[in-house]
Length: 514
Image (cartoon, rainbow, N blue to C red; front, top):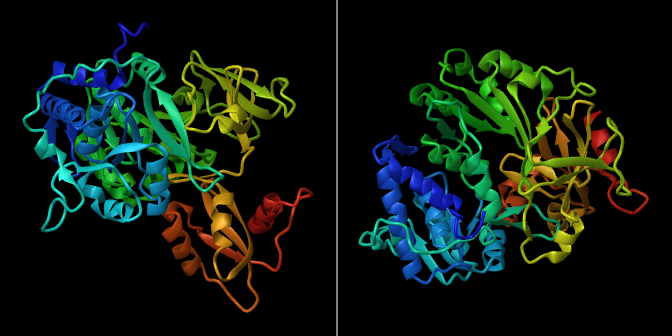
């Protein structure tokens, strides 16, 4: 696709909305409906306002937003203005967010009504050139945080801005866990993201109704993009509450839902699951971490054959999909496959030495496709570690069976996948070592019976001190954010070490689970 023919994903979505202006495009968490025409017009006006305030191709617009229509609109507006878009995740502390804001060269920070408190904390430690609110600010002085850009843009034209965007231009930077104290920024381009809109989404002849019950800053945002482009409706919820999700599925006749396995477990365990009308659901998508085969079989009994599993990562987008029809495979050592690689995605399993291993043998998963990241933001050293000759090292251990199904067995890294993001143990360990009651420590992920990972801290106390879980959790939350806080604290006389002198997490994990 040449630059002259290229239409970016945000522009494509807005074009789709403008073609059917009377349909309901978004339903807010409070139940208010917004038509496609209203949404597109507001987004175009916001884009023109951003441009008038100095946003140009290559500028960075950071979003401190939640699950609101303003969050979606701001992302599209910044995109069609040519800006590089960065989402600031809920659950990270203000100091971490401040480092991200500075690291991506933020020119404009947009704040929605759900995150005014977060903005106040962030702006106390961050220097941002321009801060704007997506609606009135809080308190008696609505300009305490920033000017209301929605009010300011009311006179702007409700049409696309004349900004040329090519497939190699920067789309955004997404952040994932990192070992250096600040999450790694994954740079994505417009071209690879645009390609996913050429693939059918939903059931033929039915306009999708997607329930965004997890953060728009993560995969729910991608699925919202696809829903709006394909003529559907996005129903927003502020956060995941199993009872509210079930009620919304019945009330709004939801067709598509995305959950992480721990959230799927909450749905299955909720008392309303047996009395809720789930007949509208056509696809229940899950992924993001290891799923329990037992609970997945239970989910099939409750929801029917509508479960689809996805395996992917921010560095590569979607890699493999397990369709409902393939969920009944015998499996490898009792595990479920994560699916077959998607068309256009190549997957090979390689040994530590880099050679391809025979079918059925384990090794590191390597991926090659047109959807790979452009690299880690301002970190060519990290990029070179994981990308070579067009191949991405995923850091995951797995195998391929004779039918081409991919299985995950472990991770090369010690990354812990939790609801809301990723946690690298070294980040939390470095912080815990500054706690006055901690002499030595190790942090690891421990899976429960349902294969959900939890952050555990193993601590050797300072002589005469006895740290408690609540205190440690509060300490970590204050400095890093709540997703990093350990759910369990184990006091030990010594931390076992590997031959390389590093904490032996395998031995610790075995001791904790037995």
